[in-house]
Length: 174
View 1: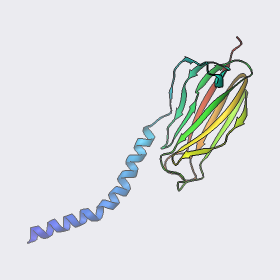
View 2: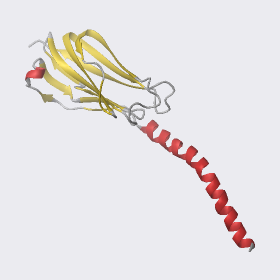
View 3: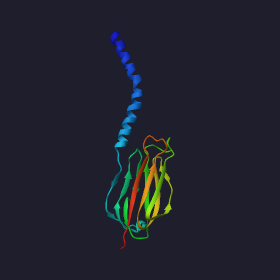
View 4: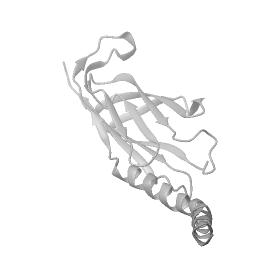
């Protein structure tokens, strides 16, 4: 009888402690996984001849990606070599870990340009599904420059602060 009572009490304590453990252990594991991810980029060299990117001589980096927190920011192309005065498209994608709208919905996507680069057209943010945001920029490059794209997580979001990538634009006279 004493042995059975001890087993029942032990099982009861285990069941009582289980929710507390899952509230501590699961977020700790998630934070370890998300903090171990780093900014990455995929580098390839390819020539393009499409009419949409007529001014692009060479795509130096196919994609620039940041995945420090739980969401992923991807920008294509990641780096280009273009003719002076040419216009080309930059596509920005944010892949959300959680369906939108999320509890931390004050997130924002911003970009800045430097050097001889200007944005001619901006489509604005378009949520194509509950976890994917797309924004397209038409950029004109008169000289070397950079487009810096930054995704800021919502206020008090526990899954990250920001994701940031730089698109390098090099101008070459032919």
